Image 1 (cartoon, rainbow, N blue to C red):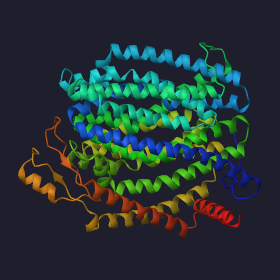
Image 2: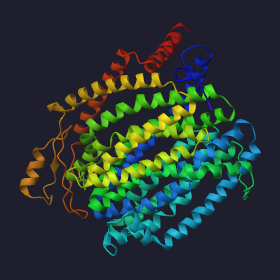
Image 3: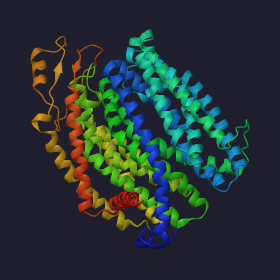
Image 4: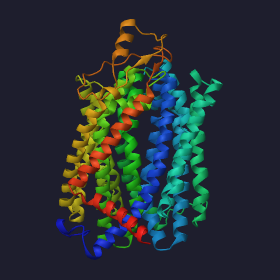
Length: 596
């Protein structure tokens, strides 16, 4: 255990340790940049995928069934692979790579892959045999025998086959990240999205299932297969050689299996708090709320994928290798720089999402079958869910620090505590005027508290993580983000930037309600009455919403430009070191070019 005092925990200010910090920061930043750019493209395609889905099916029963059907295969993915397998596997695999031991790396990688495939095969068979039982667990308020329940069962049976490919892809991603290769691992999520988009645009036209929804599910399988097809050849170029073996006596394999259970529980419960549990609880209020909650969650997860996941994924292999090589100071420096980077990027994202929840939801999802009531419901849920982004983003890096240190049980216990508090809190808040907003608020509160507990435990474990500098940075970023939020609110409310609704004349709405919608505007609304629960509806029930997307885009774009200018200006005025390091490097390079 590291026993340095807190104020000396990360010597990243001068001397040799400053060089260590700079080197760690440069390596992690390079990987994070590749991941961020790739993730940005993936998020754009993901937006288009979700926009097509909502524009085609709205918040109808069909969409509610489709979204709920993802819960079972997603849960199987998180249990058997996903981030959990990578987090347990990367420290061991990276250790062999760092020491140049490719032979043992091949043995461990092949054995774990074979074990995983066997486990997935067994899990898939069980899922196919007992699908109605699992659907009753993940959609407990869908009535057995109803159309929406039967559709959820059928879609679940189709989607369960994607786990073979997504799980294997997760393992391949862990291996490539251990080699510090990030390009292929970012491309695969783009091809996955393209597969689903192909299903929505073309396979749906074959009318397999209600309004072609089974064709969309088939597109999911195609996209998942592409993830393996892209990564495996790249991995082989790095020297990995697959073998049909199961060497359970290998020391590395036993270490991975020992790590896996607590890591699996921590990752599964962490993602469940933000995605699975809200989706399950939303079934109590009907399929439309399931679709609205998914729209809110997707918006909140957008910056996490671009910033937090990119930073933590790039830092994790280096953290694991630094532990394997006994580089304690380097480990601490890498960790603190990653935490600070997440704070600087995530806190303003939380504030921006909170203020611009309504225009961003209308811009991203609104239109066609997804009407104003549904988008407003998603916006309401988004505002209350925004703070969860901070907790879950910091957990990405803090959890990986514990995994690198071999303290896998710590994130597991904290994640278990988060879920045990989250579920009863959400159920209670759902019966208050917040209604489904209570699901979002419960996730935000429990994830932020869980993150605070994890950081404190990590500080104790390391004997200090330069907490004073992190606290000062957090205070400055909060102040800068608040100033940014106030500026954005007033800019987005300016009359020239405020769009209004339009519906097609054939919309199946009362004339008075239609006229009221046309007079309503789209902009920041920081005071919300709890919305009524939307009624269950079918595709085409309410006509099509025409979103003034150009004006909405202008409103959001201008608001974001103002946000960036105000936020960076505030950071500069507050002399935030992380900003000055970046600007000094940029201007230093420009000066060198001019003098060259």
